[in-house]
Length: 188
Image 1 (tube, rainbow, N blue to C red):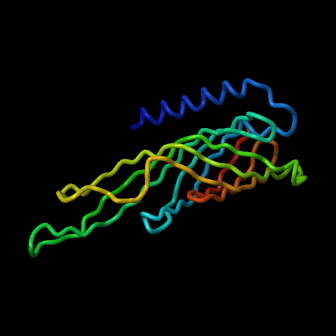
Image 2 (image 1 turned 135 degrees about the vertical axis):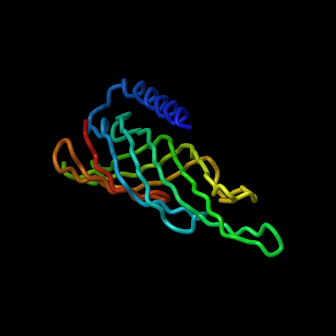
Image 3 (image 1 turned 30 degrees about the vertical axis):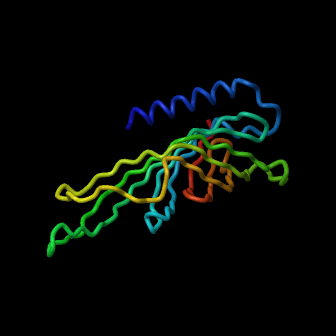
């Protein structure tokens, strides 16, 4: 699973680097930014929110538009009631580790809104894959099918803002339809 993550992330970086080779035509540069942070994700099949760790690396592609390969990680534990004979039953648990990886496209509205140098405002969308690993309790021998109603396709819509402390460091609040994060932005 680690090899798949590394290969996909590397391919995304290569594709973006090739498209970044075309010069950005004027305006503020938003790319060459590493966003690293923590957040909260809500997934209906879990029934509660879960803490996440997130990282992405933005590259300028066009005026006011960036692409960023991303990787996010979260895990959760769920319990399942299992009746394995007439009078024997037990609650068993499984743990799922979930890793969404993909590409985030971001459009910045700073010029339209007349935002100063301290603020960036954006809308974005993420598209990718979800990698899952499930670990069951060792004594559980029942049905291991997890009905979570989700696919391996990852889609997310975002609205966000960044406050620049200086030219190298900022704080990003990213609110989304699935995973909302508070990230430290490091402008490279």
